[in-house]
Every structure is written in structure tokens, then in C-alpha cells.
Length: 91
Image (cartoon, rainbow, N blue to C red; front, side, top):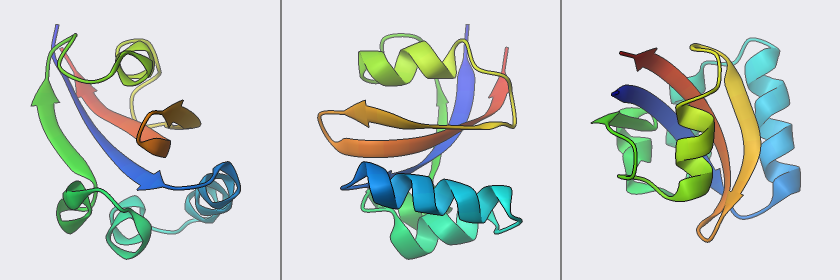
């Protein structure tokens, strides 16, 4: 199984929820990622490319390989901080 996902990484759950509400309200995920995400992937609008199970941290995998496609998930807490995740494709 492979998935393609994008994410936004921030330091706090509050910030994560605030950004999620902006996206639900119509803000562009990639633009929000470019402005707020602390991950280097922010330059690509949060795009992490395609990956298989076990290539990301466990908390990430759990969401990426079970959540509906094209629906913003989160906050998801990992050792890096709090993420908003969106699975853009899965095969």
C-alpha cells in the first residue's frame, strides 16, 4: 500500500486547531502550510510525496493509512509537535 499526503507541523495543539478551522473555512491547505508549518515540506505546501507503511512515525501512519482521502485530520501529536494531515491519494 502507498499513500500520498501533505501536512502542517506546528508547536501547539491550539495553533493546530486554529489552522484547521481556517482550512475548513476555505483557506488553501498549501498556502497555510507555506505560512505556518515548521517542517521543510512547507516549501512544497506541506506535500510529503508518496510513501509506504513504516516510513513515517507510527502516529502518522495510523492516520494516513486509515483516514478518508482529501479530508483534513488532526491535530495528530508526534515527537515533532502537532500535525494537520491530509491524505491526497492512496493505492
